[in-house]
Length: 243
Image 1: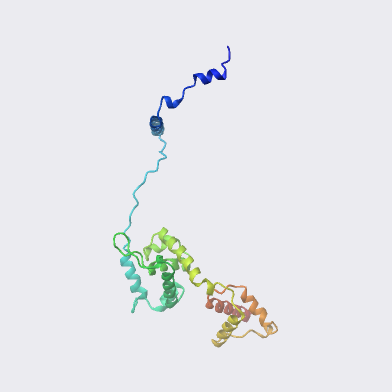
Image 2: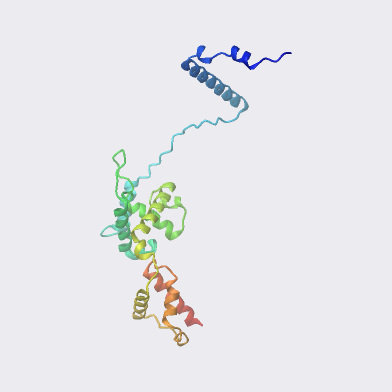
């Protein structure tokens, strides 16, 4: 069999543009693609294989009565005559009420996320107190996100969102003051406050230790809150006195 030369191929070649226009070609490709998709769907149905198409299912809406529970939260802790006294608040929130309200106010200044907003239907959204309470309960009790749904009425995904924004806001607003190493003056002031409140001074065997060494050991810990340093020193004194 004789081989055809390239010139013969070139002579017999047909320019597609002489037969199809661009619109005809695209229409034909679209028809072929639809035909192939229909065949694949029929095969999947015959084999019982679930389709890979994303079928959007309606989300289940749960009316958590957020307005009612927001008012209940205020009546329990934040009104002029709350249901629970201040020592209940301190035990359950792991901090005093003035400090908590200071954090809520600072976060409201930091981001509109922690302000009272209205949804598309004109209903009040979650209050800043609900969002901060949900985040604080997760931090205080180490509970899962859906646990706060019982009393604050926030879903798990919303609670995690609140916790993330709460952490970022606290670092942004208070990090420059509290997330830094304490100075010698701060440590000395805290030690004097502790002694004025009746905490015992170090025992004689600790007397030869230079003050700079004691202060240096405290400087290795970040200053998160003054009470943490008081508690740490009190624990050291208890251990020392028991020996």
